[in-house]
Length: 416
Ligand code: HGY
Ligand code: MN
Ligand code: MN
Image (tube, rainbow, N blue to C red; front, side, top):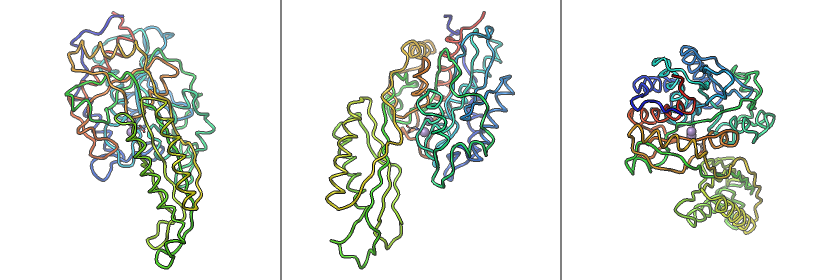
């Protein structure tokens, strides 16, 4: 396949302006974003993305999970399209670039092809996957998971948020539930541009991460039940303190992750105690343990040891415990040809690059099950993400989008 000419680049200023424009929707309180899935802010961001795509001459497809597919026609309408995208939903205290860079990077490819009057054989489809973050509705990557056949749509529709609102009802309420069956689309390939969300690329002075693998993940929601009681008048030996049990279990989670240093990680980001009153010993604690590693056996070892340790802790304290797996996927190996297209593009464009394993989960991890898939990463400042202070440079954004452009267009085959 003919590669785009070396000097072909996207319009970095236009990409940056679009990022800043999208960041105005669902602003956080400290310069980032709170545009959680299926909120009115998510709906507003979707509408802006749709307008931009239609302004770029795309037709918009929308499936029953709210996944958005902006199609730029190729010269061969029967050729399998090349998909490129990520997610517009954010964490509650999210940054301006996590996910958004990948969606708007895909749109920028289409805008640049229009500017240059370049035709491709294969159509190109810029994509927004619903609910990648999994914060409001667990698990993460929910809609790309339904698309890839990992979850049923009915199960996804029944997922509830903290207020008991169901995913399917909220998708209907914001007006972004399409008619199209989920998962019917066949892809020639899928590419996703994403910020690294870790420190490696910046520390090594590399512009581009060529993502060869994604580490696996396990989310286990744990409910510990003790007994609400007065924090003042209840003698220590009589207490059934669920909060204390949670603290001891989380110490074990940390110890177990460290035992598999340097690649394994473990923590709990979701932590609740009930009734959460200053003078009541918590009778219940609910928290989600997040274990990750590039090695499936390590993930399984961490999970098994954590469950045994947690059971010992609650048995010794006379409390009850329940475990529920609420998310997870095995380590991912991306498609060698797509990965090579990314690496060759970085080389051709003269960007410094290194192979990297993704620490975070991405929609690409599920789409890799149904289409040849690869990812491009750019650095982020101090490796910080899932924090409103998340920051990248305009140059990093442009470099990542340039490499994405070359990999996508080479795969979509330019028609001279
Ligand atoms: O959890 C993750 O890795 C992703 O950011 N949703
Ligand atoms: Mn993301
Ligand atoms: Mn994220």
